Image (cartoon, rainbow, N blue to C red; front, top):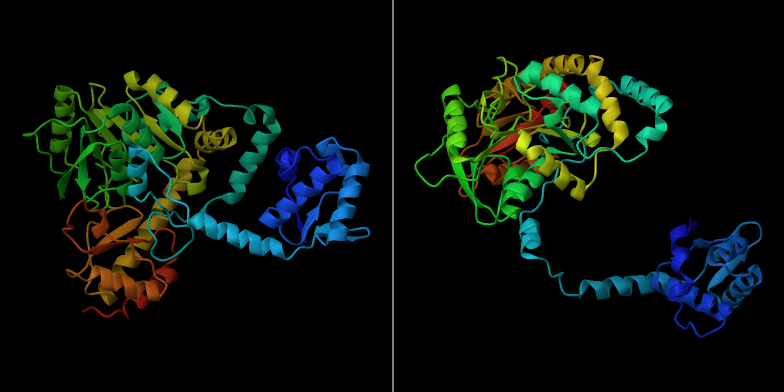
Amino acid sequence: MKATQPSLWLGLMETAPHPGMGLREQLCAALREAMRSGTLPQGSRLPATRVLAQDLALSRVTVEAAYAQLEAEGYVFRRTGKGSFVAVQAASVAHSQTRSSRALLPPAQLSQRGQGLVDTGGCLEPLRLQAFAAGSPDLRAFPHTLWRQLTNKRLRQTPQVLMAYGDPQGREDLREAIAQYLVASRGVRCTAAQVLVLTSSQQALQLLATLLLDPGELVWLENPGYRGARTAFAASGAQLRPLPVDEHGLVPDFTGPAPRLIYLTPTHQYPTGHTLSLQRRLALVDYARRTGCWLVEDDYDSEFLYDSRPTPSLQGLDDGGRVIYIGTFSKTLFPSLRIAYAVLPQALVQPMVTARSVYDGHVAQLAQAVTADFMVQGHFAAHLRLMRQLYRSRRDVLLEQITRHLPWAQPLNSSGGMQLSVTLPPGAEAPLTRQASSHGIATPSLSSLYAGPAALDGWLLGFAALLPAEIEAAVSQLAKLRVL
């Protein structure tokens, strides 16, 4: 038997069909309507007469009389010691009819911006572990016990503080820890005052699109590139100009109109894996300084480079306050933590903090506090070292398996990251993807990351979350596919 939700009763008498009737009749009518509509489905347990009388400010005699009337009519059956329950069979039928009628309603009339946002298709992440879903860290290797200990310690120390509203910019201890980490590991030039703590890098992009772009303004994007950035900027009404990528990263074109914003993944280009050359970095920083455009540096997985040291950040080369640096803990810790960050030029800090307060206030205080402790106590650096070794070994397994079993799949740059891009014979991506899906294998599309006609057919194979045996088993399934 299902228990009904307390929130149902708060407005029950306000929705009574005939407010001119007596209280007992009003309550009976309201309960009948709730049962017929499916709000109270068959088998639901009604609250005790004493509880409902107290919630609705009625006498218990009135509620008892209403229950007795409904029992006599066949709407309710009562069991001594267990309670009163909805008996009518018609509830599910009425509910189905209601849903059918709703399906015939016209679509919602959205704003132009809203419709543009819906038309992008959104940003969906894999909800379960599956070979070869891209972008997922290994949650089995995460130090769960340590995280739980840090969480419990925080709750013992300052529970009331952590349950209150927080600073929209983020907790100062976490911002300080992030700033120190970025200065030491990525060559970012910043202080804690420039760090904004967010729920995701996608939120950072949405906020930047809202604050910095008017409809029709020009944005440069890498092609192929991250769809989340394309989604955020397209939804703002910006004019997108995809620029090609070669072995030295984005190929800029300084001959045409200057953009308002340039989005880049310079350390490890998504999805090709190429690194933006120093010559182009310097040229883009100088171009931004001269034209006043913004450079958005998405450093989404710079922690996971295996064959060389990461190139210092683009932001560290900027003397003019034109580079906005974005990072996230979704890949380095775990996705549901919902903590990311942006390092902002001083002129953008207060506008971004204000805009952020309008959107969702702040990140959960407890998550921020525990993440700060995890970083300050050295656990974050140790975890990254372990994951770097682990992911490198899994990349090596995947490369070896592809070379041995999939001669028709050619790996692209594999120097780092949590996924490996492979090219496929022209026209083969769609049929091979369908075959792989029938074997239970996810093969994220490479061609879908292009704006306009795709230059390459291929896959983006995530390996970081998979054990070596799972990688081998998945590749063995792919080896069974028919290449037409």
